[in-house]
Length: 154
Image 1 (cartoon, rainbow, N blue to C red):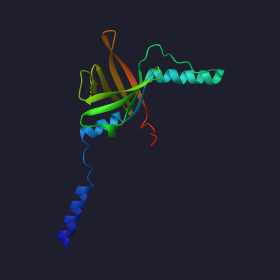
Image 2 (image 1 turned 45 degrees about the vertical axis):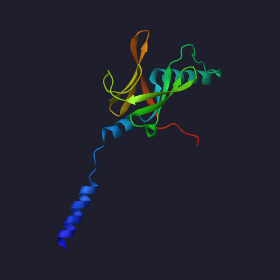
Image 3 (image 1 turned 90 degrees about the horizontal axis):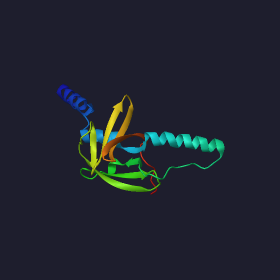
Image 4 (image 1 turned 60 degrees about the vertical axis):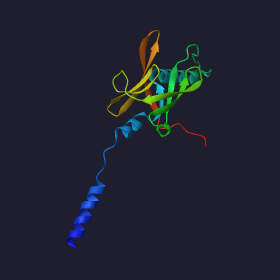
């Protein structure tokens, strides 16, 4: 009887131990969510405040379309392909398939043609960094998570 109790205690202790998360699970937790261009997000907040005070429409610069929103749903990852819905500054949207693969830049985890996405964790804040070409050189933009998931209409 005593050996059965000891065996049960050993099994329950073993089962209660938290299993370490795989790198894939950690990456999914890092990139999941809706990410907005940090600079563009601050501009929009300022413009909304101005529009509310002056009772005028919100002004948007649509002359030079650029990526301002990344919608990453990790449950849509297939094999090593990560489909990302992208919002552009001119109001249009598109989708880009990234590959879960390290790139040229530090902590780069997603690549697509000439784009790369990296992450930076500082304290409790996570930032995604989008590297893209601009006039022959690579430039980076920081994105902040604004939602864990985009509300879906079912």
